[in-house]
Amino acid sequence: MARSSTRPTSRDVAHAAGVSQAAVSLVLGDKWRGRVSEATAERVREAARDLGYRPNLAARNLRLGRTRTVLLVVPALTTEFFAGVYTGAARVAAENGFGVVLYPSPEGIGPARDPFASAQAALDGVIASSMAADALTAIRGDQLPLVMLDSDPEGSLGAATVNLDIADGVRQVTGHLLDLGHRRVLHLAADVPSWTFELRARELAARMAAVSGTEVRTARAPISIEGALAATEAALTAPGPRPTAVVCDDDKLAAGAYKALRRLGLRIPDDVSVTGVDDLGLATALDPELTTVRLDAELFGERGMRALLAVLEGRTPEGGDIPVELVVRGSTAPPPGHRTR
Image 1 (cartoon, rainbow, N blue to C red):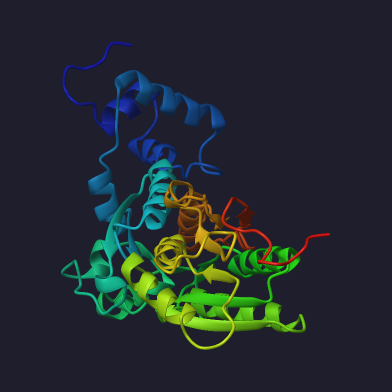
Image 2 (tube, helix red, strand yellow):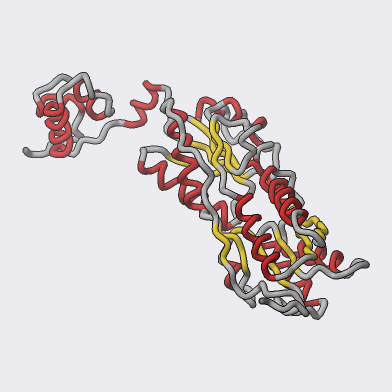
């Protein structure tokens, strides 16, 4: 079949396939089942391929009141983890004919200025991290189909919640350190009001408290190397027995802890062990390489987008937290004077 020199229309496809334009619309809009036969649907698809026909998505979306655009609200654009979340979300979105607009919440928390004249008119839905949840009210994202990432499933604003199994990650870290013989731990906690960090603190405290003779100190720091350095140095020079391990809420905090320990003349892991969360590229750039909890950021983004697509289509999203994995490297060892069996 010869292709036309001008852009083919749905009328051309209908003529080539010997069907009505309505049938072409049903087939190419994937709404043909139960309304036209499989043979007719295949004939329409073959005619569209031969003609090089592409539907006018802008016009179709205008008629349907759909923009096929999703907003991903994250704390920061410069964080490797959220870059992975975006990559996974955008991949699934593209497979389903959607686009993703990435929107950072200022300073990692809201409120944020509405990036659109009307978010409801410009977007089909929103995916947001709990660390950027305060931005949702300002952009009216909480009035759209919403999926929350890293959020309390019991109190989530969204129609669905997708979580990594952070609690299990903390359990793995704590079990590893306890098995090595550590009993005094410094928790270098992210100074960010977020469910995910509150969960980490609760789980660490509960796991340590279950073993007699243990102690957990907490030092809070902004998620920056400089902030972590200052907080760690202050905590380790405070009166009382020195902790033998530093449990960090993320890898960037761990990098700051490394600098503080070296300033104090302490060796990792001979004098103090260090753990992180995320398994960023930074984790293997540190010396010794960092023991940390690996989080699959791209899978996290994929699951978030699939959940939003399910919500938009009236389906129940996939349940269950995404598994995480403790990666043991050179930054952890038995505490000084402790003999392993």
